[in-house]
Length: 389
Image (tube, helix red, strand yellow):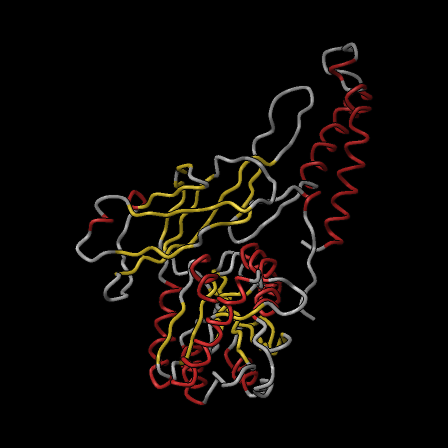
């Protein structure tokens, strides 16, 4: 919801609530009855009261992230007749694969899953294994010593795009020292294919500003046109960690990704040069950690959001990229109403496990899902972040 609409709804609510005591004071419940059906003035006041309730209901803040779908409760009975939001449906995706083969495990049931929020067991009220539309941001690294987007990687990307469906939408972004939106969200593969021809050139003297890239991608994800689809950020890069660049901190980028409800995935073309550069970056980040230098880590963010980082030789990435798209489609959808009713915008930890006997199957199963979500905020706590220009 944009800032203008929030302002209009807030003013509407304020004016309605300001007038509410006067309406209550003059309502038929506070004045003597004047006959069986009441006077014309009383009927008019009753209509005014009902209109006030309608306006207050329409002015309620409806916040939505990937994980929160608020619903209106029935109005509680009483003199105040307060209308409030008291149901937050938390929705999350879970990928279940066989540890040895990496194959997707199907045919699981609701009772095969156990969900806990901040250590408190939750009741799963919604369950399905639907093929939902995808909202994908391709985020391509253009900095560093080696160019990860070689001709073979480009070919694998084109093959993966062919597997997208008509209801899917894709955006294309590149990053190095800064982040650039090449093609915005839209349907049709031709846009992205043309956009790949307009990527900025690789700059070996540029940085890999992961923190800026994740922040801007998460921020732009709010423009996704599939409200019930799966949101995915796929980064194509040669490294998995990098120091935070000036501006947005790695922690702020992480929170932006969690708030957007995006699943973070990575595609890494494996070469001798790539392994050397990545090893240097990991070692440097580890040393920098002793001096409290912040860094962004692709694998950690993928684990936290339920995504995957797939690495293979460039000539094998056609198959690897296709597997990633298949994994994104064949996920279980679980929903629960949180027992924590606070609307405080806090980060809440999630844990999904498989119940017996699913957990004891012959092929050990692994569950990949987000490890937390950001709770809904009341309208007064909502803040706007800068958008991608």
